[in-house]
Length: 280
Image 1 (cartoon, helix red, strand yellow):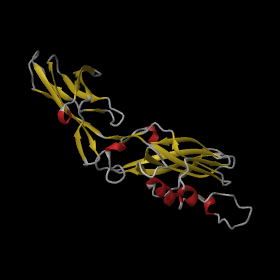
Image 2 (image 1 turned 45 degrees about the vertical axis):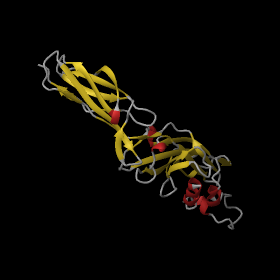
Image 3 (image 1 turned 180 degrees about the vertical axis):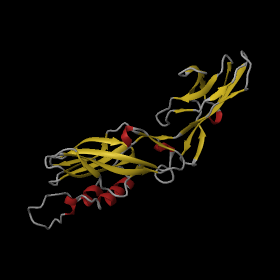
Image 4 (image 1 turned 30 degrees about the vertical axis):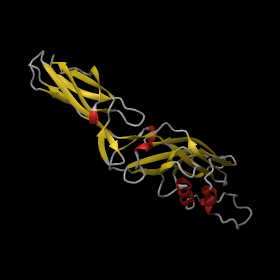
């Protein structure tokens, strides 16, 4: 119900000029839908006429990484086409198993104004951009929201034709921001002696607004010899309690150690700041 009510409220004020034509006006006015009632029913997919959505790009194709406090502004670009041109288009993000379900909708990112900032591509096509916000203090409130989100999008032709969909395909995920540290000791160290490399892998917990250890994850320990151009992987370490990392290596040459995490479906990749070791 939450999503359906939100759609109704937002699209009820959608500033598509064609939608403002009163139904009682002259018969030659475009036959446009009443978006307020149309959206309250939250149809999964509906097309009237020949308006088509051809592309939706969320956050420039990059995952949306959310920490514990900072809001993230997200752009959703909807490209649509109609023989008469595009009047407007808009979109928002939602999470859940079923758009029509009374329950099971866990969150949404909706714009303050359901009106796209449109740029004309040609006589029939425009790309309209909607801005939404991922806020860990408001709509990103539970860790279950990490992962794939869906797009609800609508486009309106200048002749009143329209199309909408509640699940336009997108490969973008919302992910829990991660942090990674590295500390190599002792320093300086005698060549051939043992170096202990510690660190910690943590990620945002949206339910506590704090970072917590990400346990049981494979993290690479990498080394770059002083003067070298790149890092090589020395070994792979599993994160333990509270995300703790610890391993030992033999001191061979001056250089930089760092931990690097490849990421998961709910957490982005992250690489720690390197720590220099002076070998004597």
